[in-house]
Length: 303
Image (cartoon, rainbow, N blue to C red; front, side, top):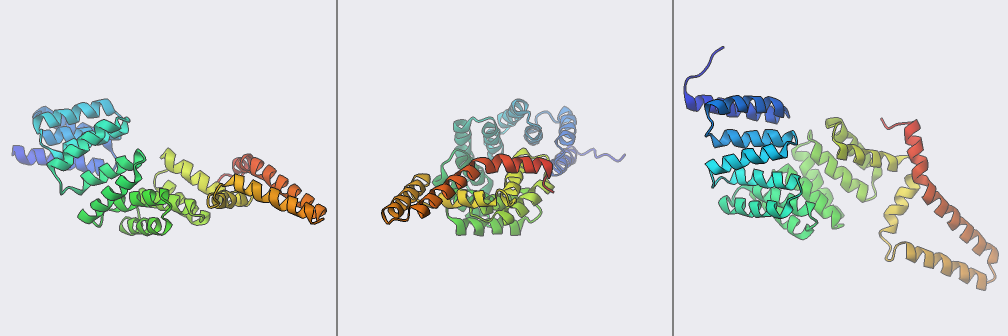
């Protein structure tokens, strides 16, 4: 087997191999390469950084944090390492600490779009939608081809009920990376929230095909599939429409009651009785539709 004696070339080869395995979602293979490399280059910050990434991918967050802190001890002004430390903090729910590291990463490298992307993701995760939108738009100003920023904006704008803009960014993200999971997942969520369950199911099914072991994607697909079953479809559209009515269910009850009493006064007691009975039967349907369709899904699983 041919080897290289030049230390710089050898170090670069180790970094390239580890990056290759990380790209292929093979973090254990990357870890093996990096641990071997660190026996020869224990003071190489980039090797510790990539090891932290590989360990994080295996959900070994404590070890990942140790590796990235070692990298930062060797290169304290490294913006990439600071951002990776922030991501590890996000993973374990230390959001305030993550935000501090991201602010520092932006100070170290204000032109690095991934710093703003990660900060925007953190703000979305913690419910700060306005700030998340601002950060993600700045990400796109720095790098208009950042698919993840478009996809995250889809979720932000969907939460803000800005359907048109949400769909626009969802389609943009999908056009940039049509073979990736996240664009299909986010536009599927947007379609589900905006009353288009069949489109939602199609994209969520594709997301699940691309990553069958992702529990969040699987749950979203199952909900999307459920909404397209004929037994549950009226319930889905009712749930969607009720969110558009001020006062929601209380307004509907008031209207039904008001119409029924008006019919009684006009001498249309029979029609009022039919109205009340119909609404009562519909309420029973809303109570039973979900368990019934869940039973149907067990009998006939989605394909």
